[in-house]
Length: 318
Image 1: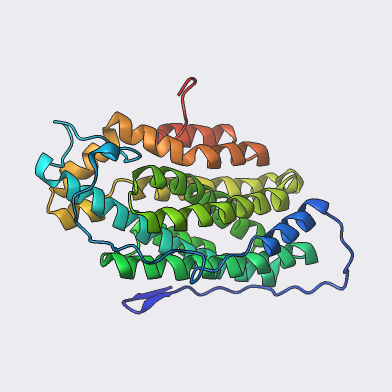
Image 2: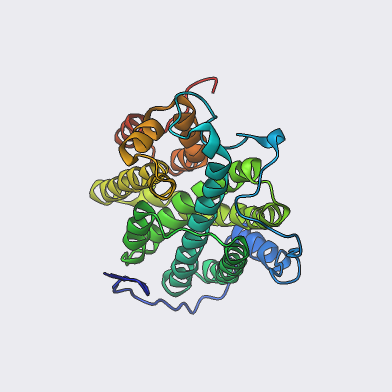
């Protein structure tokens, strides 16, 4: 792996697979493929890019704190006079991570087209490649219009590197479709509760529709697959899941925002780790992932204990 200012290069050895069986075997994948073809949108023409954006402009009090990972309080590391700036920085940071994650999904899904064994999965993955390219286009254009962006979070970078170095197609599904895309789907919905400008609201609404199909694709492709693996192979998937959860939970300690705002890094990350609303925010983000892992048979006692240790499991009634 090489990480430079120009980008990230991950070495991987994969086996490209062709199939001579052109028959349709799974109606669920065929329906997803048809839906994917019919649901294409154009980032250049379907988004209204005309509204003006002024990064740092006063935000309306009516949505003050809504959808954010924590509320303005005496305990938060953000002083009252910086609260408006924090909201803008959070929007810039969140959207930047969307962008970086979408590029990872673009590359990973292209890998799936190459490596999955059946034609129906190749067909749907090809529609997702187009989706991901459109997502990258839209978020890159938005951040340019916003005039503010962030580098990729170290946890997200590590997870994307782990996924892209994989030669096993099911691990790419697990890492990208189930974990990264599952988190993104929840983050889009939470983000739209905190974002206030109409441009980003349009983008995330369109992207969320695509992501729901992408997660469904991963679920259909992997359903029942892990029941066929040996205990040693299942253990590898469990460890991969644990590492992914750790990396993604650390992402929402928001170190990049504290650093940019000149807030003490130790104080900021400690608050993000322990604040009850921050914990609840992370649990909401992981709720779809936890549900998907349960359906796939990967929410084993060890994985559940790890998620609980990271405070990522929702409690009954929350």
